[in-house]
Image (cartoon, rainbow, N blue to C red; front, side, top):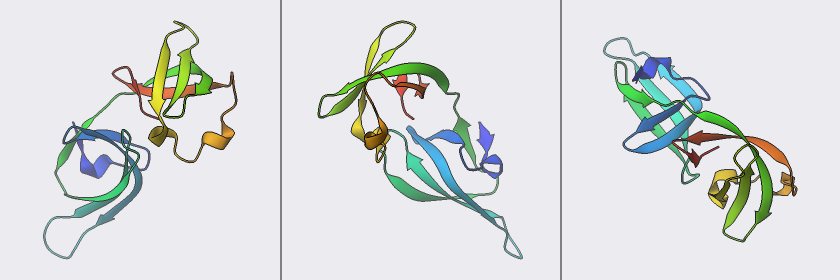
Length: 122
């Protein structure tokens, strides 16, 4: 668990069963009362962006991401298909994960992808 005061851009956390990555962070402290932390986050499974507000002292679950090298194989229309260069295991990744980056993918291109519990998320 991490305190929301420690969140910064690029931090990945688990909240209400969803994985989020912080894209913007704002901390405001009024004259009296608790500080408010506002973050813009991207849902790593759905690809959607949203705003969240936390009070100072709130905690979220920190996650550790695994970094693996994959080779891009092909696009089947619904998923991008990657192969782990060490185990040769193939993974299907939904298009929402790589929104806007498809023009840059080339056949047999090697990429370092982040995974959480075996699921590619970034």
